[in-house]
Length: 173
Image 1 (tube, one colour):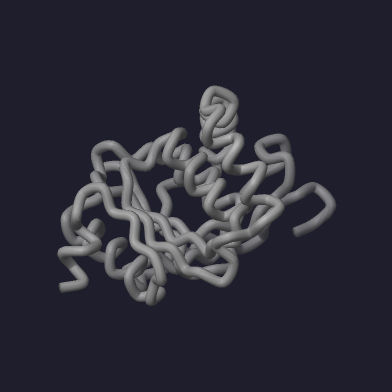
Image 2 (cartoon, rainbow, N blue to C red):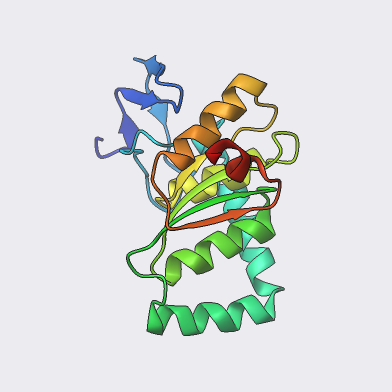
């Protein structure tokens, strides 16, 4: 990264093991509060540049969920999930993203995928990934891509599984 916040080469390894490589300059200045570089190869999202819009949605949801805000305050201090790996498969949108963040505040290492590729919000997934969370979720993913994302989340050997569609649990068995 140079002083203009550009990236000369961006290499992303998707959950299915394939790579996205682009030698073009990626201009990120003005898009993020900070420039994020994805170093983990667990992330598979549609477009990291969607993160600022997703962040706005998550912050809005956080401001309208007082019970979860109270839990977040407690979790920041007590870290009840410290050392635990959580695999989460939910309709990935602003409210569930805020839940993911609260669990992370509680010390959990979060591995997130969407429980329905048609309900996944790409900007929200990008915001979680930009913040350092492990995310494999893309709106409109094919059946093969969806299964690959579920496998990637399960490969983390989670201590806790949160699954609103049953696909993580079904895949385990």
